[in-house]
Image 1: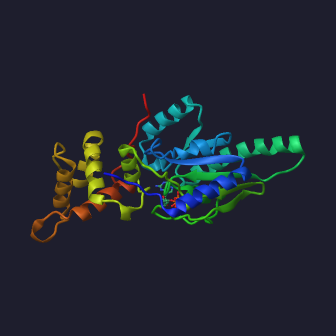
Image 2: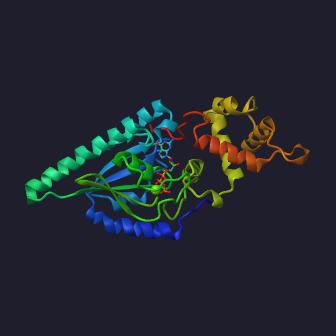
Length: 282
Ligand SMILES: Nc1nc2c(ncn2[C@@H]2O[C@H](COP(=O)(O)OP(=O)(O)OP(=O)(O)O)[C@@H](O)[C@H]2O)c(=O)[nH]1
Ligand SMILES: [Mg+2]
């Protein structure tokens, strides 16, 4: 199992982000609440040292709310402010807007005092692909200016979007890193649809997903697909799901391709319930 996806547009986007950094006062990092560590790009630590950084745990509506609470505590222990959010919920995005405006106001006043000028405060929104950066900006700005889509690699260029007369946010393309060398991380990125589907072996990914599910949330699988022997291997559980749901080819052969697409899509769309894949380190 070896997943790597670092197309040319990401290398270009990384250069573009580095160049835009000097224009930016605040960095808003969007992570996936279901995988708060796997969705952290290790390249960002070097890129954004010395910048005020706020972490948003997006897609909180798809994650287990009690584990999200544990994550907020864990981040706080690391000295990082982490805010759970559903970018499609106006109440949540209004709350995020208030947090951003409060931080921006502090910058604005400090610059006014120091330099006597009223400067536009700029925030850069960064994160891995498909985590919801553009949806976050649209929600916070209250306009649908940034293009969003249910697949990674939608945003291809930078785009400034006004939030108020003195605050602007920069939408950026999702960035992965050149070498995904940790299997667990790669799989978490694949499960959450961060990696382009066309390059994945979906049957293999679904097998690993069910291997994890049978230990961590077997009830969610049974509730969705019916009674299954969760002692079996991931592949065999997938076969069982196909048979239960009638996803079979001629002669009753389980259609594993169809089954794996359904299972992964059900997880991604929250149809298996609110499931978090990573717990905070002890
Ligand atoms: N359930 C849920 N879906 C969300 C949330 N935020 C974004 N989405 C959906 O996730 C998908 C990706 O959102 P985008 O805003 O396009 O993601 P992005 O990070 O800009 O993606 P790239 O530009 O490809 O890097 C879209 O289908 C959004 O509707 C959220 O908080 N909850
Ligand atoms: Mg985008």
